[in-house]
Length: 368
Image (cartoon, rainbow, N blue to C red; front, side, top):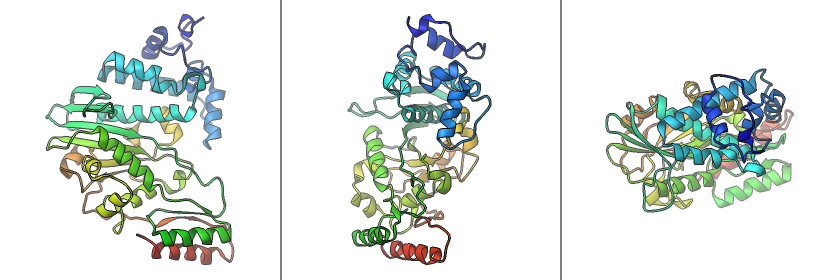
C-alpha cells in the first residue's frame, strides 16, 4: 500500500497543507525514518533523539511544534511560487535522499525554506508582486533559489548555501585560524601543533571561494534596482562557541579579508566576474531547535547570530538599498567590525597561557 492510501496520521485541522501533500502522494517515497514522517506520527522520542544526538535538550512537544511550523512554511511556499515547482522541491530536495535518507540534507533544506519565506514574507522593500522559484537568470542550467520583485520595482535574487563544517571533535587542544596565512606561517603553525598535540584546522576560506563563484555563476549582473544576495548558514558543532566570528573575520579583516582586499580574493580563486555579481553576503547561525520550530525573524533580532556584509567590489554597491531590503543594520564597505585571528582551546594548567600566546604569535606573524 502506498503511503498516500493510508489515513493522514496527524489529527489536527491546522495542518491542511501537509494533509494535501500527503493525499497527493508527494511523501510516498520518503523513508520511514525521515524526520517529517516521524513527526507526523507524533513520534516525540524519535525527534528528541535527534536533538539529543546533536547536543540539545529534549522538548516535550517537539513533533507537534515542528509539524505546525512546517505546515505554515510549506503553505507559504505554495502561495509564493507555482505548484509544480514546490511539488518537485518536496519530492526531491526535501526528501533528502528518499530511501537513502540523509538527515543533514533535510536540515539544510529546512534552512533554505526559512530564508525564502523570510524574504518572501517579512523582509524586502515592499509587498511581493511576483516571485519565481529557481529562476533561470543566465544562459546556463544553473539558477539561484528564488527571485522576488517588490511593489517599488526592486528585484531581489537569493542564493542559499548550507555548508557542513567540521567541528573540533572534542579535542582539548585545538586551534583554527580565522585569517589566511602565508605558506611558511601555515607550515610553522602545523609543525608546532604536531609537536604539542594540538588539533589544527585550516580556516574555511575555500568554502567562500566556492560559494561566491557558484552564486556569481547563477546571478545576473547587478543594476540600480536589483540586489543579488548570498545567504550562508554557518552551522556546525563549534559555531555554538564562536558563532559567526570566523566568517566575519574571513570576509572583513582589514589586511586580507575577502571583502577588504581584492587581491586576496583573487589569490584564493574567486573570479572577478563572479565577485562583482554578489551585492552582499548574509552569514547566520541557526541552531537545530530553531531550524525545526523557529522563525528567522527572531534570529535576526540577535546581532551575534547573523551579519549582513556588503561587497565593496560589486558592480553596484548600494548600501542603502541593501539595508532597506534586510531592514537591519549592515556591515558596510567602510565598516570595521571586530575580527579575530583564530579560535583557541587549551586545557587549564601552567602551560596554557604560554601555549596560546605562542599560537597567536605564529598566526599574527603569518597573516597574508
